[in-house]
Image: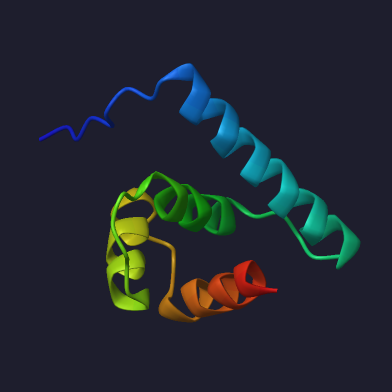
Length: 82
């Protein structure tokens, strides 16, 4: 079964792009890699319209990218909190 993402309006897409750019700039300043797992976790976090636990975020991100580990989710959440 193919899972489709709901369409995103231009305004919301622009806001999400701003947040992605801010996170990417933060990673550069911290001399950290911008990896696909981090981006997948960030995407799940940004498109969610509800509060997610770390466990929820892990399962949703893992559905997109099976290589994501729970430790990667926690490390990414820590980076997002900084």
